[in-house]
Length: 65
Image (cartoon, rainbow, N blue to C red; front, side, top):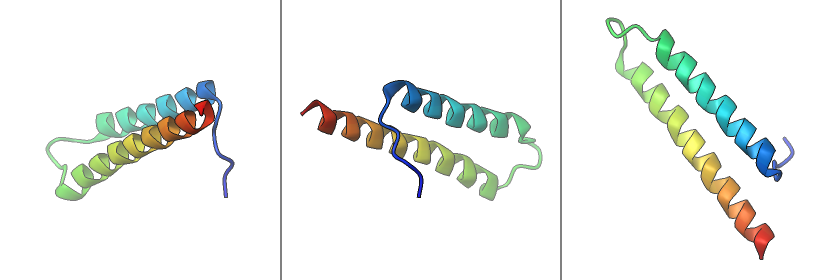
């Protein structure tokens, strides 16, 4: 299991990296041949990033208490 990221700079770097991967995947998709599975994969990637943002926010709130 991976270690939790608690440092805000590391969290930001992680999110930037995930968004960069998303952009690369998005740019690689050919609109002429894209199918529903490809769109679902993109939606899942964004959902994963949103979930991680929520985890980071919750972790920060717990540390602030």
